[in-house]
Length: 151
Image 1 (cartoon, rainbow, N blue to C red):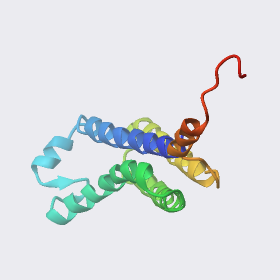
Image 2 (cartoon, helix red, strand yellow):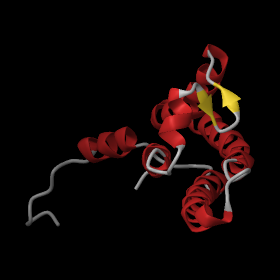
Image 3 (tube, rainbow, N blue to C red):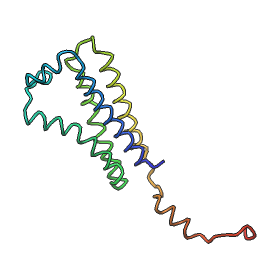
Image 4 (spheres, one colour):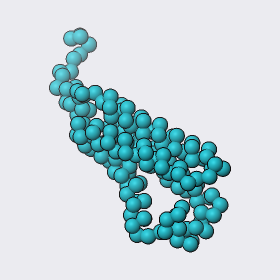
C-alpha cells in the first residue's frame, strides 16, 4: 500500500476520533449548560476562539488531502512537522479535566498519540525511491504480450 494512502488513512482516523470525542464530551454533565452560557471550559465563546478551534481540526482535515497530493519529499516533511506539533496539542486537551473522566480522556488521547506515532513512523521510514503506480502501470503496458509458446 502506498505511504500516501497510509498517511491519509491515519489522518482520517484522527479526524473521526476528534469528532467523536467532541461529540461524546457533550454528554458530560454541565457541558451543554456551559455552552448555553457562552463558555467552553473556562474560555468565553468568541469568534477568535471558534476560529482557533476550526483551525485545530482543519489542519488534520487538510493533511488527508495533502498526504495524497504533495510530492514525496514535501509530503514527508509536512507529515513529520504537523504530526510532531499535534502530539503536545493532543496532550494539552487533558488539562483541567477531573479524575472522574481520566479513563475517557486517557483512552482518547492514547489513541490519538498512537495514530500520530504511526504517522511519524510512516513518514520517517518513507522509502527514498519508490515507483509511482503510474510508472508501474506504464512499465506493464510497454512489455510485449507473450503467448504461452513464447514463454
